[in-house]
Image 1: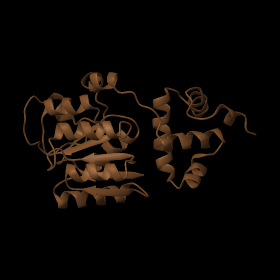
Image 2: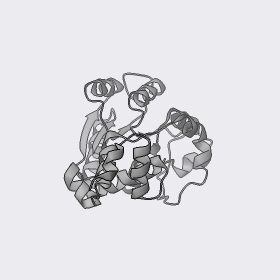
Image 3: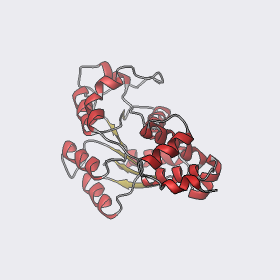
Image 4: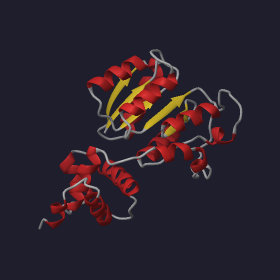
Length: 234
């Protein structure tokens, strides 16, 4: 899994890189310390499975920068990790299409839980920002694991405007499913971890709006992601 992380504070950047490398097997992590760095990386290698970035960094206004990143990689989830604690800014990021907003005061476990939720096709919003009307630096967070019931209302505008499709990697996985391969066999064939395959399959089912692997293959063929004749292979 290719992950781009960005923060202009090197200590935090190194800490985030360590957390990700410890919790995501075979993660290929690329670091940046400004929006200029991000834009240069996207020009040279525009293929990332996840982007995690701070808001206030050199190189561009954050609103312009996040818009540009999303327009460049519309299918790649973007997570904001920031010390800025403002409900209006949260809503602006959701309107752009950001999939998660994590305060920098969050624990390592909470950061990873939020990242896993986003990778599974969800959207993460901290509890405090759901209900706070103040701009402030947050107090240390509690571990919130219960789904946020008002999430759909806050992200309604973003969801209506965002059309998501399968990535190239997910199409490869659907083809493997059509061949009758198990998650373990898919992981071996595509040089992924079995956990990564499971996350991708969860997203595939969500994107295709189906409930099982067989239906995913049929729907993928119907939408033209995979050739129809793949279903007839012996």
